[in-house]
Every structure is written in structure tokens, then in C-alpha cells.
Length: 235
Image (tube, rainbow, N blue to C red):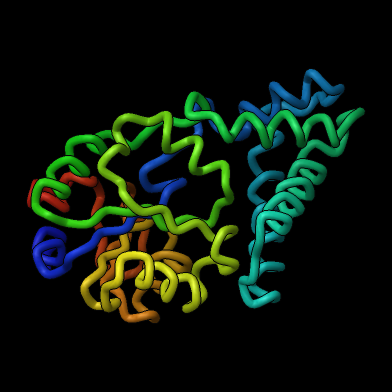
């Protein structure tokens, strides 16, 4: 089934946020390096990129071991740990964390994926309910408020607010409750094979993997650009 056909078969479309519709701009390694330098770190973006990836993966594993339970306090703790591990040569890691945590709450720290405004507007015009489904915290709300391209989004399902992270079934149960629809009438579009695609499918939702570089394993339903949701050709 094509992406456009999947859209015609559902009543709501939810998107993952970071990595799907939203991307840090400048990149996370660049910002970490800039903030770190103000607090004594000598690490470059090239040094930081693998450190960030490894620290983030450790926290993902810890969350999985804790059955993907979360809260605002847990999200603060996870990011404090990531910052401390990445910028371990900084003279004031607490100041680094505070500055970075605040930075990523601002709309100016992010850019939207090309085609976002047009795709969301057209999907909403088709009568579809639109939402974001994100492993994030309260800061996502301030980001969304400052991004006109995301105005058609009516529902935010945020892990720290509901107490569960993707790919837990409880996260997707909360998503279904938010729009009062059965799972088979909801499509989830996201860039993470486990959290988004497999998690949504396991909970009974329709799923598409946003995969611009076509790196997904065989058998996964993918789109390489958002316009495919409207029946436009692949990239």
C-alpha cells in the first residue's frame, strides 16, 4: 500500500517530532561545542558527535530497562547525565546543562523538514486530525508555539507528560485516547525503526518510516520525503 493510500485509510496522522519534522539548527554537536567553550571545554563538534551518540544510547538502554517509564524529572535527569558525559572536560557542567536545556526549548533552535507546512496544510484540508507523538518533555510545547509551519497540528502526545516513552504500548494507548480513535484508524510517521515504526505497529497503528537515505531494513514501509503522503513521487 502506498503512503497516500495509507493516509486515505485513516482518520488521524501523528508525526514523530525530532528527526522527522524537527531538526536542531545548528546541529547538536555544534551547539554543545559552543556552550562547552563558554565553560572551559575544548571539545570540537567532531569530538562531540560520537560522544553524544554514545551517551544518548546509554540513556535509551536505561529507559528500556525501566520499561520506558518517564516523567519530567526523569527527562531532566537524562539530559543532565548526557551533558555531563559529553562535556566532561567543562569546568561547570551544571551551567552547561542549564544553558543547553534552555536552548532546545526555543523555536529558534530548530528548523522544520522541507515540505512540512504544505503537507500538514493539505492533510488538514482533507479532514485528517494531526498530531505530534514525541519522546520529549514540556519544552516541545514552546517550540511548537513558535513554528508557524506546525499550526495545523492539534494534538501533542509527549512522553514526559503521559509517563511513558515510545515504543511502549502505553504510549500509543495514550495517543489513541487523545484523539478517541481505534489504533487502526491512526497512522504514525517517524524516523526511528524501533520507537516509531515497530512500536506503532505492535500497538495496532498503521506506520510509515521516514527514511530519506533509504537505510531501513527490507520489509519496512518507508517514505523518503513528506510529500509522498500526498501522492507525490519519491525523492
